[in-house]
Length: 422
Image (cartoon, rainbow, N blue to C red; front, side, top):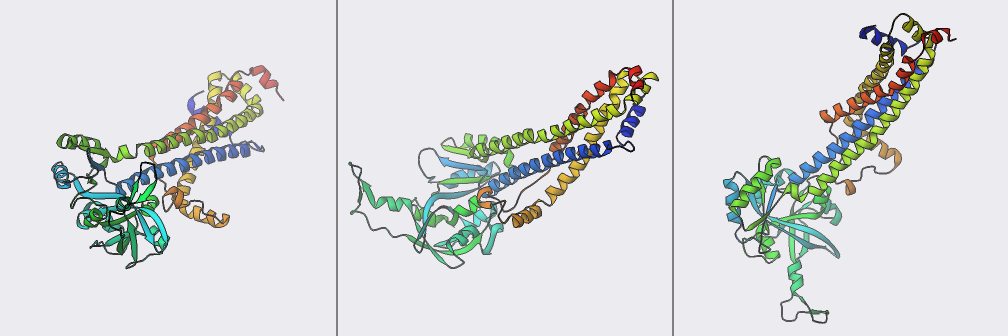
């Protein structure tokens, strides 16, 4: 018996007449379909999370951050910027410090980033993220996010007060007994008042929730840094994933500086995302494994029903290997059909994921995807061809393996006993 005949019989046995086995076969295919679809959706969402997280990190933070080894500020950031530009990078001086924001009687901690708006507009993508107002940072002007605007009930032209930790610290001394006493020798500290000139949104909730932009000179004055100094220099390159080689070259030019790439800063986060994706694949593949067991049950039923036909085929000269291949082919066919339908279902779910999330959220009466926890404004998702191939091949292999036990049962049957079977 050739392979063509074996494959024909495998397909023929999957749709017998006047029998419920065909319904069981459909159920088996549905089981594989659901397992493959769930795997595709889960891995697509995990991949989307990782991709958007990387993109948001690159949008909101530099590819390389440079700090002084021996002080809290870089007195001459122009030297670092020049060395970076010689290597093909784009760099700006940054003051990045925490501050206390006051709005009437409310106090909230936020991060302040001092920038030169003209330079930052070219490398920080800030201009594209402005939703209201324009990118302008004159003296005592700040740019806040849409999240901060909602939190503190602020709008363009409103005022907010910024308290500087270094200035607050100078007002008090800690005595030898550990008590905090007011420093009478220093001047009374007055906080700075700033006007909101624009409102931005990067779409990364944790960044938008915490960061306020102001002019570099205002930031130097606020945090009592030397005029023209920077806490760090942010550097961007055309290929962010090649930042390690760029950093090595810059270290040779600036040995007195500490440097951190975006990969180093976010190593733990990116590692956790990859581990989660691998673990989700490992756990979800058990859904396909359960479907493979259902295929085994289906084929055992078919073997029982086809006992006389198996005996007749053996009597006509069919080998045990040929009989085995008939039923293994059945598991293979179920795997292929289930994988194909699962790919289609998974693609549809990923394609319309946000609509489905909104619908389920409305039905459940609660937000299933709160951006306060997930940091994104919508559910991400991206199907990767390599993931798709791994899922489909794994499903087909498991389903094919599921046909081995029934195939062995059919192959070892005695033709004479099979033909006498009623």
